[in-house]
Image 1 (cartoon, helix red, strand yellow):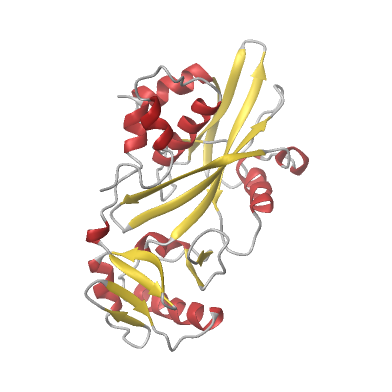
Image 2 (cartoon, one colour):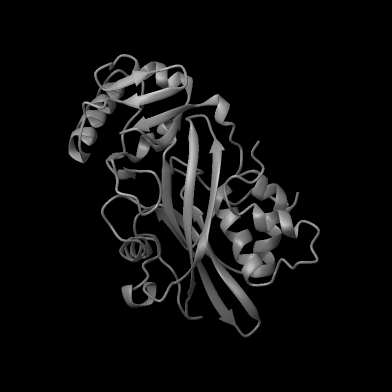
Length: 286
């Protein structure tokens, strides 16, 4: 295996397999035909066309759209079309910084193929014997990627909270990092990808941070979502990333970005150009 294999695993999108999801005349996502068929039972809310799923234009305003879609989702859960909702609101818009047109429950974000956001924090220790990274193992009862390796801090970005405050919240929950230390995290860029899965489309943008922590700091999970933490030399992280599928798929993409930025993957690597371009969605599509 190779670093490029990890990058390729994050990209897999064919627009012809989906229908555009349209709200207020603007495309905000992608819906598979199967989920579109499930929405046909709600013609007052959704209009199903050959190449599009449209939220009714009669629903004007953020609150009206949000309430109407939530009512549909609740009924889909009652009818066992959906398993359950997560009670966490994600914004639906035309891109980062745009005014949200509504929110939907986090559980259905891939079903609607909307652009979703997250934060990933590389926990760095500058030790005498070299650079090290904190790695967490996800709890075995996690709904997504149980038991996979993860970042020191990583989480989705819901509606109604700033990136900085969300980072502080996740840092406390996942690793018991004091706020004063968490706020020293440095924003270093973003990665993005579009990947079809069994639900629909992962259409994600991950905002990346580097956080240097003291050598004597030891993370402690407080929300039950992380089983254990390891402090690994970067070289061991690279080996695990390259030679196994131990890391959660999108964590691998963020670590590749880290390795490029810090010079561990160098320009003389034959895959360097592909790795650089593969950090953003659109790569490998078509």
